[in-house]
Length: 330
Image 1: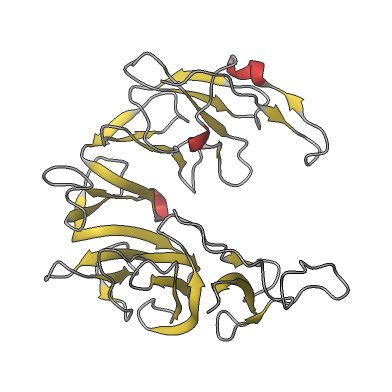
Image 2: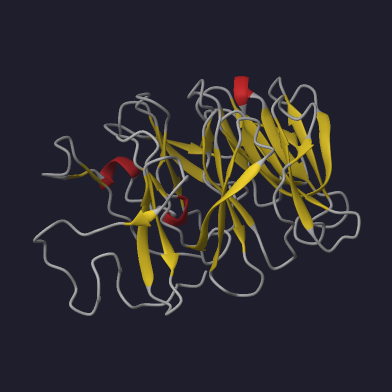
């Protein structure tokens, strides 16, 4: 149970001034771990998830159509487990996962909800409003991890198809659908990739990982994937690989890439104003963290130099080092 009050502010001048709009959400305590669910493109849609104390049958959200100028409180028939997600194509279509592992959808921007599947662990929007999700068969998401089923529905829950088994996790980037699949031995996982929304699969030519390791899609478009493969042991780093246009063949791009845990800390950044340019950090042999940059989509990386005549931390022996601290653990 949580007690307290959130303060909500709004700016129309790019952060120069802010107006207190807490009254629009009835001074409700907002669950900050869910953040602000902001609609795609320029839809003006915003969703805030309120805290409901007292064990009610469902949660509460606040919906806005007009860039947070007004909010409408709405009671949910379930308690959300994570932030509500928008369809990339139609912002009035929403997807939510409940604390009881139910998969819920709304087609009218959260006014009405319908549960379309039970025993769901993870769900994502795909192309043409196809929904992909994993389900557990026996006990729970955690107990069945590595033995989940991957399913999809192309019609908002009216029909379903199983497209993968022995699933640990899945993700999407560009036109690629990825699945981390447990091998027959049950001790390692491999990445499988599909270009047709799960109708057919190929095994990606990437190293296998054990139980304590992870894969992470850092960036992807329609013809290139940056994939992080964690090193064995609790090292805090791994190796970045870049793909061919099919997402199957991979080349080693950058070693000792800093990434503490799955869902943890990484600063991999796509510099969208410069084509093919990315910035990230590596963990040096002396455990210092150094920023590196590539201008050719990961073909070659070089130290990121500080601007000429700019002040720099005196503890750093060179301009490409970012402080002598160790990695943060997630």
